[in-house]
Every structure is written in C-alpha cells, then in structure tokens.
Image (cartoon, rainbow, N blue to C red; front, side, top):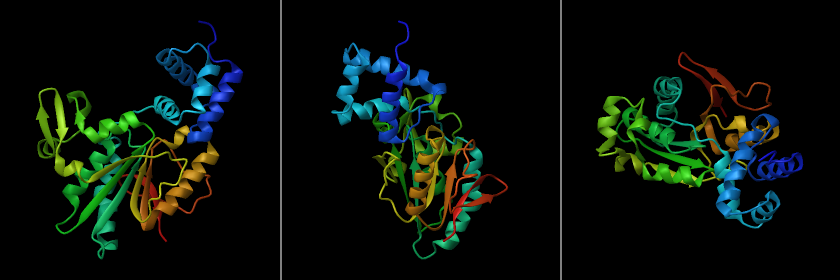
Length: 269
C-alpha cells in the first residue's frame, strides 16, 4: 500500500488530535496513528485522508471515535500493587484523621479505561473504611467504548487475574463466561466521559489516580493537566501517577511523598 500517512497528513492529524485532547504523536508512535486511520477509513468506506479530515472537523461524534481508537487501553485489577499498598497503609489512615468531620472520601480515577482501576479502589475502600464512613469514586475516560465496559462491570476470567480470592468471592458474582461486579460496588462509582484537556469541574477531591496517561501528553499539556488536578483536589490530598511518570523538573506546587510502599504526590494546603 506504500506510504499511507504522508508527512503533511501526519502534521494535519497530529495537530487536530493534540488540539482536541492534548495527546501528542511523535515520529516514534506515528505507526499507531497510521493503523488507526486506516481502520477508520475502511469502516467509513472512504478513499482519502482528506475526505476523512473534512468529516472530522464537522462531526464531533466521529472525532470522539478516532480519539477513542488512538488511546491504548492497557489496564488490570490491582495494577502496580505498590500504589494500593500505599493507599492501605498510608493514605487511608491519613484521610481517616484529616476527614473526621466529613467522614466521606472522594477519589477520581482519571483515564480509567475499562474500569479495573476504579473497581479496585472501591473494593479496597469498602474493606478499609470504618462504619459510618462513605466514599465515592469518579471514573472518567476519553474512550466511550471503554466506559461502556466499565459501566457494565462484567469481566471474562482472563481479566480478573490479580484479584485476591476474598475480594473475588465478596464483590463478584461468578457467571458462566466470567465475573460480574456486584451492585454494592457498582453503585459507588460514577463513570463519566471526560477529556483531560478540559477542566472536569471536580473540586474537593481527596485522591486523584491518573496513571500512565501523562506519557501521551507533551510538556505543556502535562503541566496544564497537573494544574487542573491541583484545582480539583482538596487541601491535604494525594495524587498518584504512573510509576514511569514524574513531576520532576515540572514547576508544580505538589510535594513529593516517599513511603515504604510507593512514591506519590501531596497537596498540603
């Protein structure tokens, strides 16, 4: 088929995707964009990238579909266990002291993909919070397809690797071809479409999980996202990012926290 995505087309699409989502395509991940665009043209029965581009700038729904397809949805239950150990041994004990008056904890799983992360958080809080405390988990993503899976809360056997047996028996119902999250956990989570390029409108959150999302952004978009997280968090709250990500060298107000379990960030004021 020869070169499908010319340099000028690459620049055109790269700018559109960046302007709409903050997702940054460099020459190293150009091939991902190339293959996703081929798929969309096939599905839409279109001949040229120019035709598809003229549809994208008019049709917001199609633009959402393209953005959905270029984000890689790699996730699993209890992914990076060290973060959940830090939640158990450090963050929750801290919040139990700090939030004595409210007795409510609010967590945002930003870039939640197919829901494994927010469900992990919700099951963990169910286990750790004393009677009289409540919690809410907001789960957002750029991928509508992933959000539908998360809302459904059904996972084939291959996807529940890593879930401890006691969690599995307590919070899932076994079905013939997989496992269904129980309603008591589902109702603690609000799934919501959100593009991290925009302000979520969230305020007074206690914890934000945004892991392995910033790697898709360039420096300017990363900084803008981190500043919006600061605004969304309450005083004395926590931010978790991916273990290959760092705020090092970025001028932010977050404090670096190193514990026996994991490293993360804190908003003290």
